[in-house]
Amino acid sequence: MTYYVKAKGIVLEQEVVENAYLEINAGKFGEVVKEVPAGAEVVDYSNSIISAGLVDTHIHGYKSHDVMDNDFEGIKVMSNGLLECGVTSWLPTTLTSSVELLNAVCQTIGEHYQEVEGAKIRGIFLEGPFFTEKYKGAQNPKYMSDPSIPVLDKWHQLSNQLVNKIAIAPERKGVKEFIEFAKSKDIHVALAHSDATYEEAMDAVDNGANIFIHTYNGMSGLHHRNPGMVGAALSSDGTFAELICDGHHVHPGAAKVVVKAKGPEETVLITDCMRAGGMGDGESKLGEFDVIVKEGAARLKEGGNLAGSILELKQGVKNVYDWGLVDVADALRMASLSPAKSVGIDDVCGRIAPGLDADFIVVSPELVLEATYLDGEKRYQA
Image 1 (cartoon, rainbow, N blue to C red):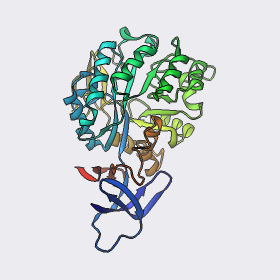
Image 2: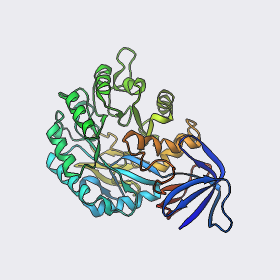
Image 3: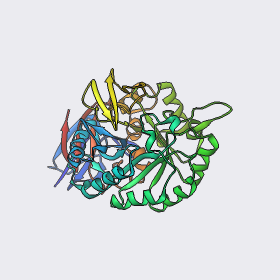
């Protein structure tokens, strides 16, 4: 079945085509055209903007479920719930925990990931456990250790090769060899929860690490005589810098610094959302820790550290536009194309191109989500 979507603007990888039609053919994207054949079926969004579905490459939980619950029925709830956030592809994200639990989680997702009916699972992001304690954030330090190639290999095998991103602290021992092994398995190495010097972080980048996790948060800060992890994130070439743009984790001015340094092409909007996302204020948990959600922020009950977020990716997109950092198209690309490129899945998602699954969203000119489509079918209507 073929139909056309009429839109005020269609956001493509390199341009925005105005007042055009997007062809949808058997659940796949076709061409963008200015005129349609006589009698063709047209879905009219002529006051709205069409973009590739959003891609969340760093998300722990949503709708009272968490990846670390090791319950695939909960993963299914998350997958369906993410459609209302504009997300059509995602990486279930783990926490620093025991090797045994991480083994089980990798195996569960690897065996069942194709069973989700909402946002598609495009990989697994292992956030830890190879971190350092000083910037532990809401990660449990009792499980932290130096990177282990055999352990990563086991997770990769158990997941049916679905692990495609892992975060480590670059000052740990054995980082160079670990990155080389990860790259040989097409696993992207990210840097996070670390007190690394600028030099240690840049050495990891030189060895192949390509992503800085939630830039500014959980890392050594920028000082003019010691640029730290933040300095490495801002100055390194060919790396991606994640941002949690909920207004709590990073000041809009600090977010602007990242966008100016990296450009929208290398700035990745993520949520770092935990199980309280979509549930409002109240008590919750992140891993083994108790959390209080209040006034839009999730914090550890003990100590008050930020504990992930309750951000929905569609709101992060709207925030960077409302803060005046980027235009509409780049705000959308920073949550679709950039994250997909950061973990090498832009061949299947993150952009509108002929032959790819017709996973797309409809937004107002002010970036309010109106609808989410999966394989050319409308699955969420605001």
